[in-house]
Image (cartoon, rainbow, N blue to C red; front, side, top):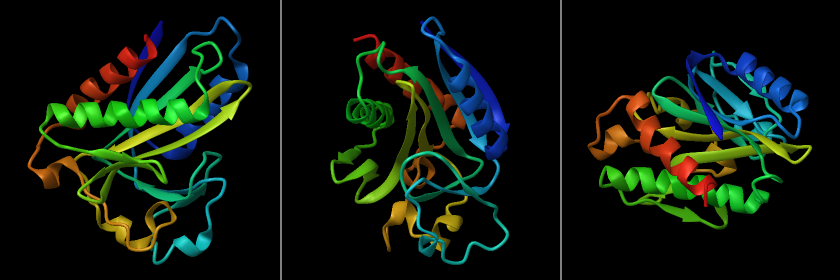
Length: 201
């Protein structure tokens, strides 16, 4: 059983601390959860993040996160799903979980007529060589937290001020730029359904 929590628009710092608290205090009987949210504008640096990839960030806050990966941007209009899962109980490892989340985004995008792919050498989801979905995870005591982000209908310009995911010149895109205009709450439905279906296999 996986519980769904719709958090609405949240600041990154408090959501991250809540995830950490949940993960540190769960036990073998704790039900897994998916947290669905959007964030106020923020740049986050992963554990391996290099500040040289922050170019001209202006007034947008920068937070050093404990997820994997490099630097990314979160803002309103971007779907964020945090995966609070006992991966040992689910018989998953980090690689299979990344693939599961990539394929869930790809499956959801296909429902809107968008063909997306994953790249083994650069985790995430891409449309026409532009990144539309990102993944960053952390494992503690065989449980994971953090998760995925999928660009829906947002101001993409803050991505111009970083080397997204540590890649110079990597362009980003979103559903709105691909002719799909839906609410982020609506987009959350096929993505969460795809995750839940994959977890039941």
